[in-house]
Image 1: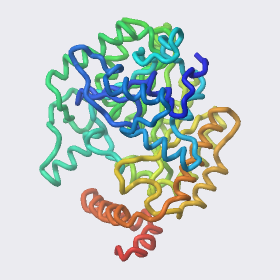
Image 2: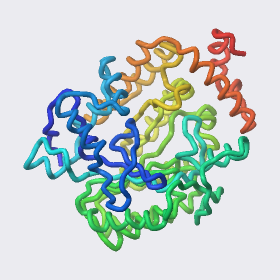
Image 3: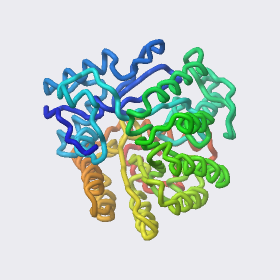
Length: 422
């Protein structure tokens, strides 16, 4: 499990070899969240060794950057920071594809990590998200523009009863995922169920049933959740997972709780988040010591200033047990990239860095990654086009959602004023 990744070129990426993502609603795949998605053949269901992925691996063997989204890591590394690529090269507990044992330069390999986006069904509409990942965004866009993704009825616990799909035979295609898991689940080290919001999707319960009937005793099951759900529903789902672990149907369960910052700013960004509900549910999960618990934060101009407040809360919760922290920045939408205002967040980054723990190797990696984002901002200059775009976007959100960015982010009034945006 802890073997070093054997490919040593300057651009080699463990994710490109071992990680696969399936976007089932659009029949697309990728091997990194930073990279472009592309089609794969649903009939053969060969989602990991597509021509695009094999070519990218071949280019990395030559020390070349493949493009197609790999520029994200390239730019961070050029700025002197620690990219996703570098972090994953040394991440503990991540196995290599079995083919690399006998051929360390193999380009047709078996994934060790699989994650699936079944649909966009979600109960939130975060400012940096889109209707591709959120049915709430799709509903809002349809209400205000009359345009949205193809909409279909789904069986769900969510308040919204629609989600999109762009491919035919969605029901039969998800059965192909279950079939693949039944046949190959024992070879996976990790399966990520992604959304939308997994705790609102019936497919998540169906996956639990697959593992119950076809055990994968070495598997870590992981979800990314906004935890904005009624507690009794959360308790019901956690009990099912506890059953699987107790009977060695899966090895472990990891819940990555998505939260970017703290206070009214957090509820604005992850609308319609209720922090009191989030904290109650988080403390319940925190009490379940068999659950590996992570908080993942997305850093944007709207979240970085109160990210340190979240770190202070984490310090308080960590008195109960250890919580791992991770953070990322975004490439889309461009008007919420962390550095569009130039280097105005240096003090906020320094406050956050001072609060980041460094007791473990993972914590050191996470802090170095945050410092890489800081360095990216330090080398940037204001992007007036994107600043203007963000100004109009926030005004639109106020109109759509009956909220006020001026009350929530008063510092932005002065910042926008520098560019005559009032």
